[in-house]
Image (cartoon, rainbow, N blue to C red):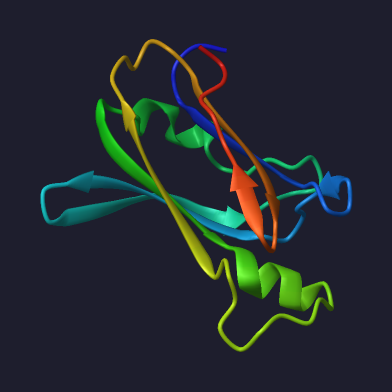
Length: 119
């Protein structure tokens, strides 16, 4: 797979993909924000629609926003009124658009891990 961005999310507390988790991906350009893709993680753990955005992927700064608390509440997990992770905002850079930038998020209601894969 060449170029583009992909996002994969696994709920490590349950050992399953975070199907239904709301994710928004935006490109930042100074004070301007451009929506790249928004949706819910599918049954394969991936945010659908990012393949269609491959041509739109340009060098720059991006933010992925994951609605962590809403996801866990929808799963029936009782969270505090002020959750530890509510909306997780992950800012990253794309320097070489010929390479693929894969973001594999591993999360629980209490923590997160992510790295750049797909190089």
